[in-house]
Amino acid sequence: MLLARAWAAKWKSCWCGDNQYVEAGTPLVEIDLRDYQVALERAKADYADASAMAGAARVNVPITSVSTGSQISAAQADVDSARSGIAGARQQAQAAAAQVQSAEANNVKAQKRSGALQGAG
Image 1 (tube, one colour):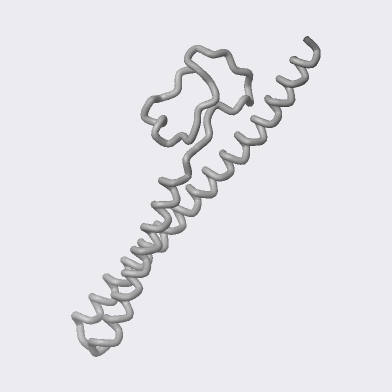
Image 2 (image 1 turned 120 degrees about the horizontal axis):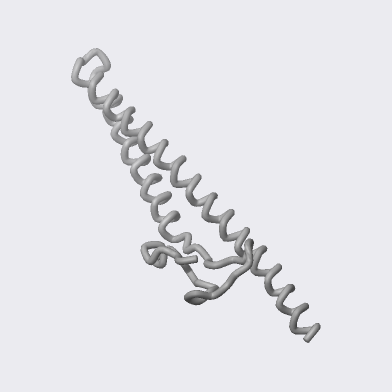
């Protein structure tokens, strides 16, 4: 199985070599969660900025103003977009964490298998 080099930057470590035979379920890599954590923090910051803009638009300009209404709508759209970004980043981080957990469990199984084979030999 060839692993795309583009993904190599997203790995913490790789547990197989080129052209190495691996059994189904054997962990191949440990995923680096830093990119997902950065995306989550960026989305949180965007959300905070959009929330502040929405609050400022409500406080500083009369509600009856047409321009304020459009500013509030735009700021609310930014808030909604930031919330969506946070949700997406959280899902990516959770998926990556689940992959790491699965890889760790598979690694433990593989090490047990390896130990059993070495003990039998």
